[in-house]
Amino acid sequence: MINYLGAEMKKQKIPGCQLVILKDKKILLSKAFGIANVSFSIPVKTNTIFSINSIAKVFTSVAIMQLEEQNKLNIQDSISLYIDSIPASWNKITIKQLLSHTSGLPDIEDERDLIGGKGQDSAWFKVKKLPLLSNAGEKFYYNATNYFILQHIIEKCSGLDFETFVRKNQFDLAGMTSIYYANSYDVIKNKSPTYSYYFQDKITNEYSKTNKLVETHEEFPTKMKADAGAFTTAEEMTKWILALQSGKLLKDKEKINEIWNPVKLNNGTFDGFGGILNAYALGWPVINRKKHPAVAPIGGGRAAFVTYTKDNLTILLFTNLTGSAPQDIIEEIAKFYIPDLGS
Image 1 (cartoon, rainbow, N blue to C red):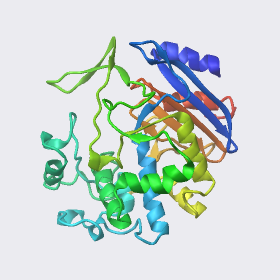
Image 2: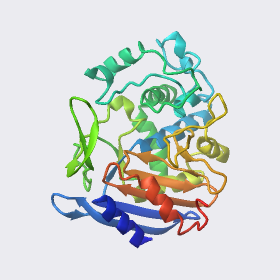
Image 3: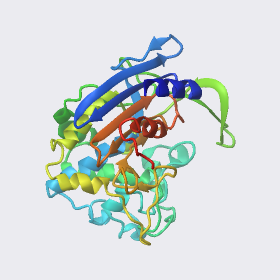
């Protein structure tokens, strides 16, 4: 298994990573590999902080369910109950459709940044003038507008700003002390830069792969923490997973099944990112199959954890290389524990 990971790191030229394997709620392995900071040849350690980007959506998913447990909202509610001054065409969209990216809403981001390039409030004003991409529930469109609105709903229903609510009701309960909402340029002790071999043409916005390793620049708007922008370690994330599985975060176990259950489109089919991620639940990408189904949150194409929901197995792989597709590497590692996986 370790040899396989080493070979994959060499093949993809992944500078560094952390691997944690959790079986039956016990950590079987926690190791760090490679280089965290290439410029200064600083090795990855188990306390190295990685950008986990959109994995942060699972915190939002659980936050919504926590508020539902407190009878402060219902995921079947129309978003019009919680947010003012929205287009009439948005009134039938539900909280569940925001969570599952089936709302049909236009995207508040484009290839470069927030639309319009004049900040969050301006982008929100502009996105409300755009047409829907589809009717609610008709198609899967992964975009930031959904979680921009979810952050507003969480703050309105809880009476707290988003990060305060999540820290109090999730991170503190899980005993997490090294998790941050930040930007790539923020100085955080033990934080690894994020790297890429892809170059974006500033004129066409198209990406092309090169042989040159570069540091990437990421800035996460404050009103979109529900969407992305978390930084932590694989071991810290393991604390959160254990807290979720043990009932510390959600008292009703059926709520966990609900956030993991793939959402059907109006025509009865499923859709997701593609490849093994062939469906999507409530903030959780899904590997939807009869044998050994799994939920697989991913972030920035470089960090992932996969929970094999019927096998009591979770594998976390955080890397510092964008485009490394860690969920695919995890699937191969999982075969050491689930021999008939993929058969």
